[in-house]
Amino acid sequence: MSREQWGTRWGFIMAAVGSAIGLGNIWRFPYVAYKNGGGAFMIPYLFAILTTGISFVAFEFILGKKYRGSAPLTYFRVNEKMEFVGWWQFLISFIIMTYYAIILAWTLNYIGFSLNLAWGEDTNAFFFNSFLKVSSGASVSNFGNIVWQVLIPLLVVWLTTLSVVYKGVKKGIEAVNKFALPTLVILFIIFVIRAVTLPGATSGLNAFFEPSWSSLGKPSVWISAYSQIFYSLSLAMGIMITYSSYLPPKMDTTNNAFITAFSNSGFELLSGIGIFAALGFMAAKSGIAIGDLASGGIGLAFVVLPQIINQLPLPQLFGSLFFLCLLIAGITSLISLMEVCISAASEKFDWSRQRTVVIVGSLTTLMSALYTTNGGMYLLDVVDNFINNFAILPGAVVEIVLIYWVYKKFQELRDEANKYSQIKLGTYWNLTLGIITPLVLAIILASSLIANIKTTYGDYPQSFVAVFGWGMVILLPILAFLISKIPWKNPEMAKQIIEGEDDLG
Ligand code: PFF
Image 1 (cartoon, rainbow, N blue to C red):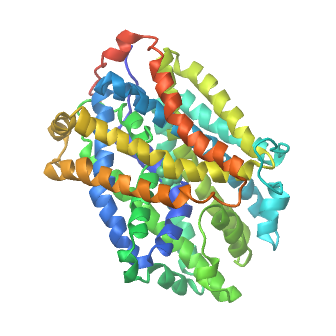
Image 2: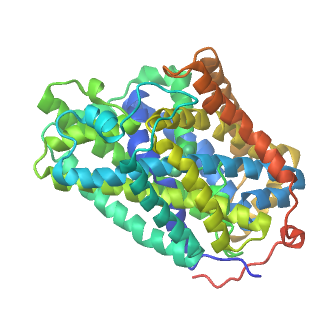
Image 3: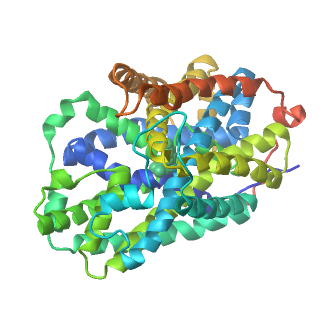
């Protein structure tokens, strides 16, 4: 059986960039940058890209290309004992998917709401009470009822995503990304141009770019920069490994890593400009200080932006444009998370792609329905916080330390990458990946552990955080280890790397 392959290099790049550009770029980056020193944040941010981001993408690209497997299979081929790392990343992708899809379901609704500004004047009350019907408090045993208004668009999001991966790498994932990503960039540029030409935009941009140099002395600022890079580049979650496992053998991976990292950051910067220009406009209109308006995540997209949209000429157009951008950016990331799970399960159990899509797809759809309940919003908040702080980063440390220090595969990977890439990886790559990256990640992890272990996250009951926060995070590596003990259904296939064909342009 031959392995699926991308049709063109461009198609692969579009898919990798499509995965990287997601909610993280549009709603996370602008706020993270603003909060952590504004213009001065560019220094730790660039530093993080140069010392970790690009090196890590290049690392995952060459890893996937060389071993040609899903994440668990790739690590299994590095060393059998490493398979569990792949399942750990599989489970992380799986969990993230279950709530990432929910946010896209809200987004889909909001495209509709923009058409008649259904959110009214009090966008906060509309979002939490009228739309999500959030219950009064979080509880482990009582999630309330399903909110149909969320469940139905959720099913649409899943059907769309699953039908793309069902069609396969070239006809599904590549075809969609080749169309979706350029469309996103064009639409988003229109959004940004509209935003920067609004009255008051300059004050927003000034607030965003104004450097607070003293922030450079704060460790938390450097930590935020590294975390943002990991999140935004979809690293250490099996995604880039899976995507690059469909590359032909002679493909240049290092150049592709540079292209992916810079495109992602370019988009991020654009988003910071667009969002803060819009905030500047709102501040001028309402008299509220930008610092009080600025927020990230759910509050920004579903509460503050609708308020801004209300104030604009042609609000329906601007509103649907923004939410459409968010939807496209998110769907292409969701597809990549799904492909991690599809490729891993189909190789492990020797199922066809189609069968795997039905099985894994049903599971994720069912699990994500839990977030469509009245208590779903609380669950989403806790799971998101814990998975980002305590699951992705330890997984990354284990991945790099095992491959670099324990199984000592770096030289081999470097030689392989250099054989086909214009940009050569040298000592710098070893230094940044083998030493700087694990060290920085360990520091980030330790500091967020110290900050979080003493306090209960949010205003939630302790039992809620214990089960869905700490409990979930601890369960994942254990479950991953158990899955890795199940034998490969087709052990011959697992051991033998199928050579790809070099028919790419
Ligand atoms: N890189 C994408 C984003 O920035 O939204 C996808 C993603 C990766 C989302 C990792 C969440 C995550 F934890």
